[in-house]
Length: 142
Image (cartoon, rainbow, N blue to C red; front, side, top):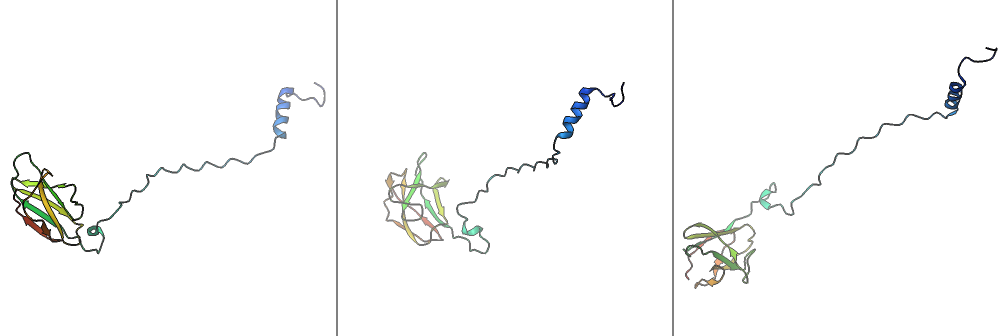
């Protein structure tokens, strides 16, 4: 070996020279964690007055019809009250053989109503005046 000659193979020397000419780069910052997926909040369209703190409870208006309309028949209610119309009846709930009920918390004033069997046969009685916030018992005849 001559003076000035290296014992390191030429291939290694060239590779080292290439590495030394590269511009050093700053280390990469760690990636931020992915944001957790959160379901959008679902808010009720309307909070009943009874559930608002400090608000007075809404008065319950109930109509009870005492009549046996026979097995398989239903009693319906029509009128001017909240959720009622004269064109199409609302089904009442049968609570015993001769008792049907309908209730609402949306009545803010007195209204009139009438019962029908199967939403077809009108009772023979005059329209009943229903007091808002009270329980009204009617005994219709057909």
